[in-house]
Amino acid sequence: MVLSVKKRKLKSIAGETVEGFNVFKSSKQLAPAVDKEKEKVEDGPSKAKKELNKQIERDAVFRKKYNIHVSGANVPSPLRTFVELSSRFGCESYLLRNLAEHGYKEPTPIQRQAIPVLLSDRECFACAPTGSGKTLAFLCPMLMKLKSLSDNVSLNDQCASKDGIRAVILCPTRELATQTTRECKKLAKGNKFQIKLMKKELRENAVDDFRAGKTWVLIATDVIARGMDFKGVNCVINYDFPNSGAAYIHRI
Image (tube, rainbow, N blue to C red; front, side):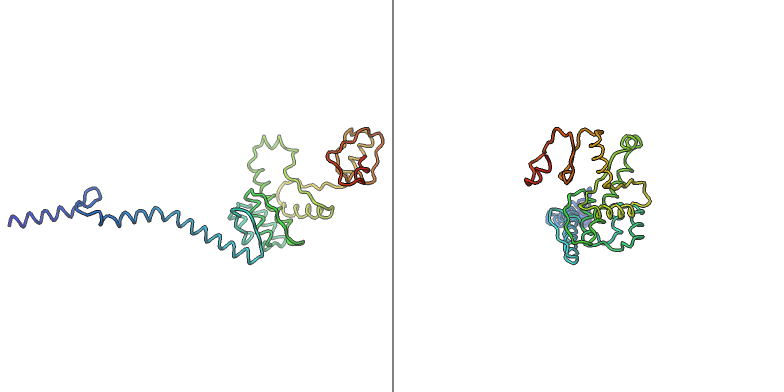
């Protein structure tokens, strides 16, 4: 009777655990638990990597569908809809409202890729046919950035930089400049952005002031040499060598 009681006590002691470990379990029995802990630790990064690879594959399929070709590293995912401007980049409601009012329902291919790239503070060189929506592709990020800057600038900074220019858009023709100004005003409706078009009159005023002697130094491109003569000019400085002999003659 005594021996059987002692054996029972030994069995009960063997089944007890101390500080989370079984007293008489072998290392082989503990190995599966350790492996499970390693799997949990490695599970997070591996899941994130798999999800990233899936996203890259989805983006590649989407770009192929809309004939979008990109180059560079870590190119941002293209836009599926204009709603993503708010969900991904925090676009304010005024811009989405203006887009809807003027009939912009779905982004064009150039807009789908160029807008996320520009909003990610990346350099972007975009090429697309006429009428593909390139103007909107750079106006949207520009207006969103300007709004973000104006919200983050303090009152003192705003007063100090009241007359400063925040953005400049260069256009090759007068017609395109007029069109871009019109589109920019449409999208900026509801904000106090000062959008101005530099017209031909400004150039003519500068020329008139130079002729009248109000301006002593005139800095210009070769455009100013087309049929314009000024009396009393004592010095002409060529910043670089002209492309042709005719251009050189017009300059001097």
